[in-house]
Length: 301
Image (cartoon, rainbow, N blue to C red):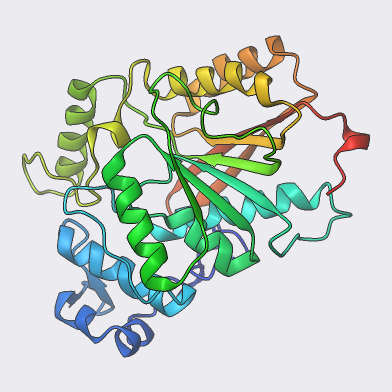
């Protein structure tokens, strides 16, 4: 297997998918495998069931998640990219920890829009032992996440956000202190735009026209008024009210063109520091923006 040098050095998926190992732990995956033109084992990534089975096998094999099921039409996240975000967050926190990667439940992380899959807390707890709180506006996602926690014997706090206009208010309690927040925001501004993105992805997969995505996704997961930039702008504005309760606020930014206006907003917000962290993932580059209200001498973990 060829190493993918763009993935984070600690990412367990740098060498691609070891299907023999995955099938050994999850024999059901074998029925979904095929051979690519080079003779290497793979799956049909346009097949919803195949992608879900691959995720189950990855989470079991690499992260000891015995049970992982999500509602049929909900977002099925690509695991390697999600793993990268967690590792780069660990590097970010290490900057305030004498360059030492922080481990253990003393590190508190808040996952905004944790989703039905609960994927970030699952990975973050396994890799670093951090204490996670996951929040979501969708009751079905919260129910699914609770089921995953219960079936795996995991202690992850889950909170429902009842107001679609609020991001932190109502889910950060007065006594909460977080070292980092993370978020994969909805990136489309409308249902129409989301549907166009779906059709474009299917054309790229040579599957013609379809309303289905291989990774799925509910409306709340894929779009919101103002799209990605609108959501992160609200996050920046509202983070000021919780400036002393979180060391680093962060969010993925899927569209590079959004970095300039978001940087302008952060400068105007008068944060102590903000940065853009680039993440190479396979054939594409992802990134997240991070900001803090703490001056550097006060950032010790």
